[in-house]
Structure formats: C-alpha cells, structure tokens
Length: 282
Image (cartoon, rainbow, N blue to C red):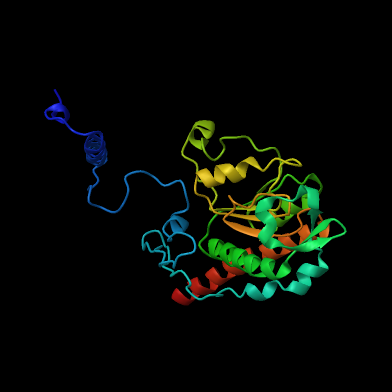
C-alpha cells in the first residue's frame, strides 16, 4: 500500500502531499531541479510578456539575454509615458470623431452609468473627460506589449469595418479576426490545433458585441486564459470582463477609424523604441 495511506490524512493534507509528489516525479522525469524557478512545462505565452508582473503593478526587467542566440537584455521601461502615447489622443480628436455618441437610453447597460455624462434627445452622451485617461492607459499598455514583442490580436464582428481592421493589423505587423469566433480556440487550443499553441498577449476589441445584444465570446475566453484585453465599450455593453475598457462610440466609421489609427501608432512606436534601445546596446 502506498505510503499515502499508512496514516490517516485530512483531505487538505492529502491534496498537498499528492501535489508535492506529482511535482517531484515530473521534475525527476524531466531532469529538472524541483527547487529551480524554471518550470518544466512549456509556457503558452510570449516569454517576454509572461515574465512581467501582473497588470497595474510595477513591472520588473525582462531578461532576453542569450549570447548563443543573439538576444539582447532590455529592461522594461518604468517611466509613466515612456512612449509618448498620451499626446496622441486629445478630447478635441475624440469629440470631432463622434466618440461621445452613445445609444438610446432604453439600451443602456447599468454598468456603463459611471461613464455617461448625460442624456440628450433620448441618446446617452459619453463623458470624454473619463474616456481620455482610460484611452491613454490602453495605448500605453499596447505600446508596452509591442515593445516586448508580444502578439496583438484585433477583433470585431463589425462586418462593414472588416477591411480596414484587417488592413490596420497588416500595416503594423499584427493579427486580426473579424469573422465568426469558435468557442475553445483559446481555452482548448491544444486539442483543436493538435499541439501547444502560443496565445495572443493582448486582444483589442474594436467592438465588444458579436450581435446586437450578445457579447463577443472571445471576451469570456480571454478572461478565462488571463489574456489582457482592451475594448471599446459603448453605452449598451458590459465592461466588467475587459481589462482596459475605453468608453466610446463603437458604431460610427469616423470613431472606428480613429481607434485603429491610434492603436496602430502605439504599436509602431513601441516597436520602433525597441529597435532604438537594442541599437544602443549593440
């Protein structure tokens, strides 16, 4: 009989005992020191991005040094606006692009009340004074992900804006999905693709709804897999599962073009900054 049952253990003790035994066996098979900080299991995320601290906390330096592989060690910028993305967006730009227009009062989501300035002719008006700092934080985070060579995925079910969204993703060297989203692509990717698959490091939702009333399934899947998300949330949407919600109009072509232009600029700035910092270390 196994040593686990030589004496009576409470369920909590038994759980910890089994967990420790499995860890030691896995490490023994893979010739890995169980005290080592390096996990014997491969990560499904970008190594540079997964080594950062949780969002909203101070980030530590990302080690990418390997003389044999030719990588360069770069520290994660700790300046508040290292990439200068705060100046990309202003209230005047948001107003002229009709970002402040929401939906009819009857379609209002109660979780969007803090971002609504008022109501005019039965149409909700979004408070741009609250949208601006949230948008700046989202752009700053996007630039950081691009700086760390993370994978960025643009998503939307807005059929009319599909061509410009995919074109924007190509121009900044990233990815887009504007078609029907199958459940399990994030949460069950190993079975669906037959191998361990690297998941995106950031998902940007230009529209968070897949139909008139249903939220995009990828929002829930991203939350399950701890993938950070940025989402344009209109007055009829639920912002709770979005990591960086940006209150704004998600229907007007002028607004969507502004969002895409700003996100593309932030991504290109982040990649260009990395090239400059790498050239200084060579």
